[in-house]
View: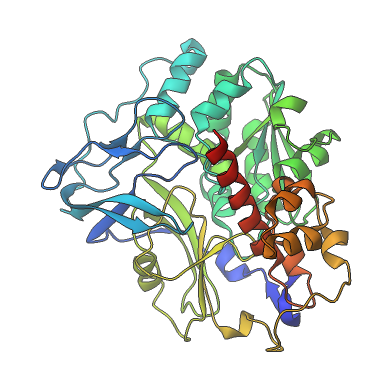
Length: 440
């Protein structure tokens, strides 16, 4: 499958990367763990410089409100607590740990003492909350809060196995290599939410993954594998709901308003490991790819490892990079520092040369072709929203539906004039949110 990219280039799905098994990153010398890797309040450090910490030990907490606790991904000594820029561009407090390479586990990491059949919803939610699990598809909404908001309001769970952006194949490899963890995580979530129906939504370019999952749910009357057409942005919650149920999610509404709750496939595996082993979310799978990377890999990396650590494990670079992207080429964000660290929502690190830039070299210009309008999955007029954003008329941008934009990047992707429409809309959304906070 090929994707046309701006400038007439094409992004081919890297079949070699998709075919490569997950490799574990060698233990890094240090990790720098951000205390805000989730939607909600940032955590405060509960350790101090000089403290010795164990793997899985709580290092960041708030105690109340919407947040996710943060845990140490290695054992060792806390050498610094400092503010650093995150991929989102904001400054976040980081706990820096010097690895002692002993992998000493924290005593708190214990399996849940009851069987799943005997566990209550409240007990499962508590386990997930303590494990610091947030959505691992990119949105990073705290999983425990999503479960609590769905109880009594939904009749089915949808597991997002689409992973529809080019290059990224972390979820695909997880389904191929550890499908049991995914399915068992779904069972835990069914018990927690209190429903009896779950769909594993897999695109038809990942039939090998579907073939791994189907035998594990063949005897289940609650879990089924659903095959979806491969298209972008199939992984968006609105597209998933419509493809599976035929229901349209109105602007401003949540999936629970149409009886659904959606979880990412890697989130399911994290839930299983928290329930069965007591392991908090301290590592994740990251696809490292791009034409500059010497040997692209899928890497199981500890939270807090640097992008530089991952790139070095891939053999370094074979070209001069023009851009490093945290996430996919459509929705990812450019980062400027190889010391940027892996977080709970980091699905990929892409290192691209100038070949992926504007091929004409001409300045961006809207030619009024309407492709951004025609291709917008949310049926918006991205050209007008972006125009208002550039004029700093954020009130008008909001009137034209800026907050309904899912930031899929389809408008920029299809623009023959190389306009950064999605970037302009993202700025407008940030300013609208800022204005709403200031009114409170």
